[in-house]
Length: 357
Figure 1 (spheres, helix red, strand yellow):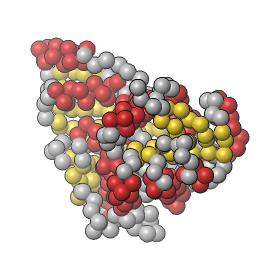
Figure 2 (cartoon, helix red, strand yellow; figure 1 turned 60 degrees about the vertical axis):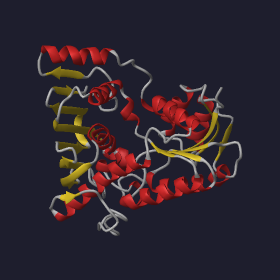
Figure 3 (cartoon, helix red, strand yellow; figure 1 turned 180 degrees about the vertical axis):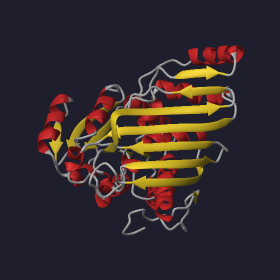
């Protein structure tokens, strides 16, 4: 019999979705305390999710012996320091996207986590949609053949009111624009299926809103597996869609268009001929749908912790996605393709912020 893990949640925005994920795993987790500077929203979440304690004292959480996990749901600029303090206090960490503001920060956090003996799990809940999981299953069975081309669209709508929140739209606090904060799931799904990127050429612009960071971008990507990818992002699409399309030697795969549930079924899997279609369909029939999103990622995290294994999403996974962002920002500013991986000698390794990079 496993012991429930006790979670302290910091934040009261995206934290609502985390709390729903923990409630779906009530046999694995309990949340005794929520910390938020927004008292109205924080107490409302405590009432809704039956959390016994509300606090605004973040530091008090790290010293508690009855907390196993610190779940960080705060604005991006605070993620690194909160993760560091939690690990150094002997707590496991769950941290929302975008994880940190540089590849260097991820590398430093790997060292901190290793020294602490605790896990730091980035959030990439889109991985666990049944549609994407079916594609992952087919790649593992070798039923897709060689990869050729992937296209991913993140076309959302964010009006000026969205950026009225103090920390949004600013390099110092949001750490980047739509490429970092909105399309980051697309980057992870690309890497999840194909592995790391090899080179990026990018254009980025601020076209939709009067903000510091980009809200529209187009990327051409070479993957290490030899395939190509085309990624587009805008926060100026009146019809909001997300869409992923994978072209393989033996199979073409296309997602649904729901902007925030794109990895869920029903995806289309079109094989090269009827015989191969039967093999694909039989393989897909063997995939048993389970809870997806946060609920699934949290359940897998619990399983990993109980088994003493690495979390289902690792710091290396986050590094891959942030390396793509780093390469894209560098390409946008230089007008040239940026080769990868991003190493310590890269000019944007320590920061892509304009005043520092």
